[in-house]
Amino acid sequence: MKIAGIIPARYASTRFPGKPLADIKGKSMIMRVYEQASKLENLNKVIVATDDQRIFRHVIDNGGKAVMTAVDHSSGTSRCAEALRLIEREGQFDAVINIQGDEPFIRPEQIEKVIELLYRNEVAIATLYKQITDSSELFDPNVVKTIVNSDGKALYFTRQAVPFVRNVEKEFWLQNTRFYKHIGIYGYKCETLFRIVALDECDLEKAESLEQLRWLYHGFDIHMAETEFDSLSIDIPEDLIKVLNILSFS
Image (cartoon, rainbow, N blue to C red; front, top):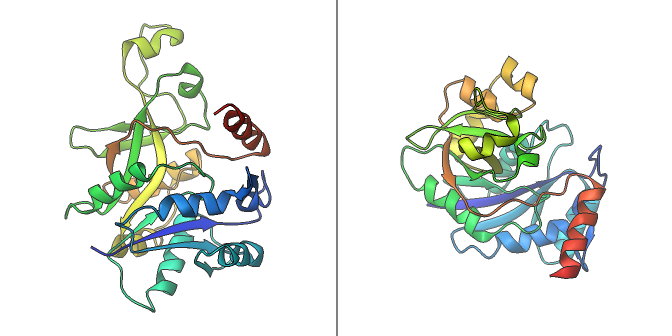
């Protein structure tokens, strides 16, 4: 199977403009992601998909590969689809891994788990989940929760704490059942990627602001693997400060 690793990276983030170029101990965030992904032998190509010349030039000047994409993409998934069309001019791929550009310390083992799922014929979309062990995450709407069935497929994604534990005070929920959060790395078979970006929005997606609900709503299975590793995403400048503090003590 020929697999591309695509890292969507936009400059004009409303909460953190220029985030991909943020310096983390002498190296930009986007190059840290690129180098982590490049450690995987199972990725035949790793490329940054951006809408900004500053990011494009930075990646190229630092020895990476990048393509310019449109500025009007509503999601990283859509940007990945355009990038795939561009790189397939040089050769066809079977699958794509959508690697978040704001997770500079993503582990290659996490990407590998998604790749392993994609090698199964029945898997068209793959992603990861991790058990929640901290109440602050459980009740944080910025942490996306998921429920997985016995076949390893996602039943739902939500910003709420699910399932609801009846007759138990919320402070004791974690002691009574298991909760899982979504780790936002996706893998798609190429044909499926082109199909899902053409789907219409659904009310669930609009309510929760989670694009993967569109795929579930339209009948696509999302296969999931459990990871023991957390994600360390940087959404706002304060997150970067926390990361730098962690690194200073490591």
